[in-house]
Length: 468
Image 1 (cartoon, rainbow, N blue to C red):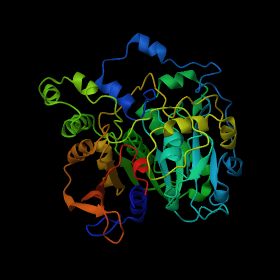
Image 2 (cartoon, rainbow, N blue to C red):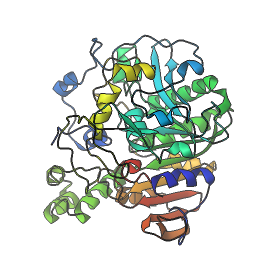
Image 3 (cartoon, rainbow, N blue to C red):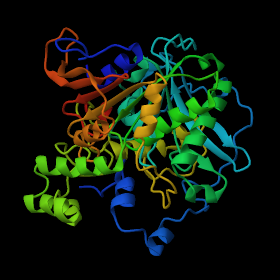
Image 4 (spheres, rainbow, N blue to C red):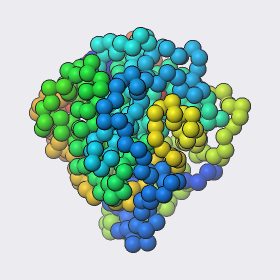
């Protein structure tokens, strides 16, 4: 077991122990690239901002949509069957999708998709915890990535129409809630155009908190249920910042137990240093370029020398064609397909899919959208992580060790800034629960209930590359 093991161990409060335990298409804007440009590139020019301005035309994927009903029932959000869903999976687990209003006056609403546990087809969520998943970016869809390419119930075949079951979906362990945030990402929207140029960390956290409290009024069975916030990449900001909102407001309906973040943006300086150190140690840049970075803060060559590779997994292939293939190629959940973005894009733009998901959109151009402005981005979330630990909130940090965007070196440098004493030293964990098999990665646990786990052979989106 690999990525799915992470969620089992987070929810059960178990530990990974030594000898046992858990074991050419156009370039796309993906998680982390926006942050890279924002902080480590020249300021945006006026012409750039004009090109990224939000439009309210009919064809704009973030265009105005009719506001959702003020009061909507859970049953109205039930997804009976997704187009292309395997017949054998119908009724195996409840699915829900729809909108939750976070600002009625602005007409701002966030889209969600809920997958309840396997074997609860009768509509009961059982007693398993509620786990919220957030993708990063900023601007990446939790539906387009998290649900459809990583830890969700299904993956999309190469025809862009047919789904196949993900046997390692995280709803084996929890009720998994995917939220598209902020407004303008995925199917989420606002009827106030200005909202799209005022997105930032603070507003995103506030809206996410409002979403949760309003969503639980629609799904009251989750009030008081053990609750975990999880995500990857720039969700290294979203996750702890939302957890901090929960701590600050102390709503009785939300029983926050822990957070989990993967290949996460945590601390600007060490994230940046770790990325370029990873480049050099993995032979992506030259000695001269590494010296230029160290001595002169010259990053120019470092952005060019790696060439046209998949920086999200430096050993993975690149997608060579964005064309759909019909009849579809026989898929394998264990074999990474670099063209999956294109399959998901086609699927989520199918009007029948949007109807089944109760989504009000025109066209979703890509699972990641580029924000022209991001008005506030904290240089570090380490103080928030420390505060969460002081309030007995469990913290799990995991890292795929072939990611070059937010690599394991960045994560280790960032966590070292906390200067936490080690509770259980660095050690391997194995791919078999019997303590044998291949090394799955490494784990170290710190006093204060923070754990760092690496996943061997996984890239930026760990559940995509190592789903088992």
